Amino acid sequence: MITTDGRLLIYSAFLSWLMLVVAALLRTRVLTAGGLKDAFGNRHDLPEPSPLSGRADRAARNMLESLLLFVTLVVAAHIASADQHRIDLGARVFFYARVAYFPVYLIGISHLRTAIWAVSLVGLGIIAAAAL
Image 1: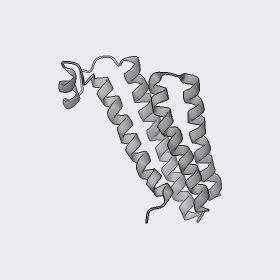
Image 2: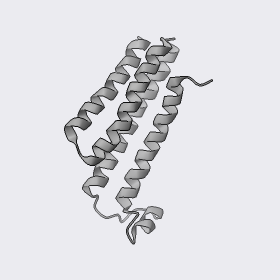
Image 3: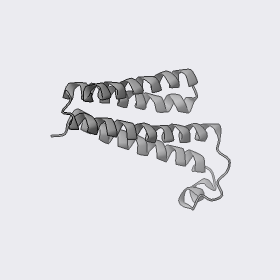
Image 4: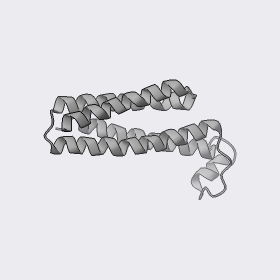
């Protein structure tokens, strides 16, 4: 049986993949006449990114950076035999904050985006504190 934090690791990996796909589709402008060709091509001649596609790309890269920390902390917490409830709490806080982060970043609400990002850090902090 998979633990809550294990399930949230899988969900976070899927969320990361989804964010990368959305960023790529927006960057290639897949819904335009040449966009589908660009999406399936080598992408060496893409148009300049739109503000929306730039935000999507930055959000996806930020998620990859955060995912590395999340995985590392969850593994460390398990190695340390930390309290599973604290690990799960931190994982929930991290994951749901990251779910909220993406649409807020895409919309461009910078202060709210930063606050949500900070909440995801709190989730990482809960896991780290459990491990220590």
